[in-house]
Length: 200
Image (tube, rainbow, N blue to C red; front, side, top):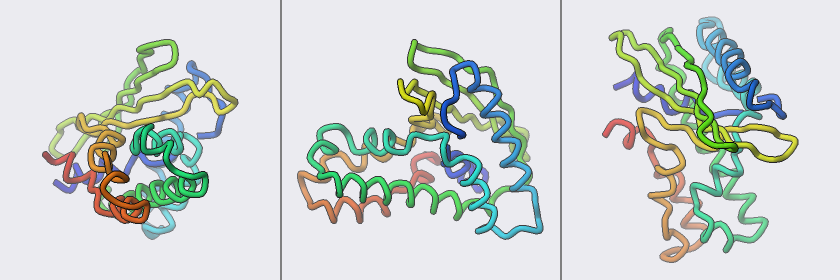
């Protein structure tokens, strides 16, 4: 149970911008090795570890695209620029809080990064497996897309044990603005639990 809870927050962050499709595997692998080194450091507290990890990964994910996908185009387009900024800030904060809260569950699990597959001209999937103490493989799937900008290829979603982060949020936020206010939407983000979905 604890190991599954660890999976969700391990993947919430982004790279040095501008990576090409041919650099996805090597760049991701290098970043993950650095993260593992940080997590294995018993002399550093959890808060400091999380800050170091965010520093390494905070340019790999396209958080704005993830936020749009989580809310859905119809709802996203109804927001003002200020509301979009507030929603994005709250969304990222929520993901990082989940990460920081679960770091203590890390107990030297091993990671196997597989070879990426380009599923379309603008999409790449990169599988990863975490090896538990029970010798079982827990699968994670990074989903990259071509931003068509100087940012290069970035992650727009992550599947954890077959559960999509963005789809989990979207299913629970669907129609939120029809039945409530923007303030209700912001409050609702805090009630979403990725762990509950992954454990089903």
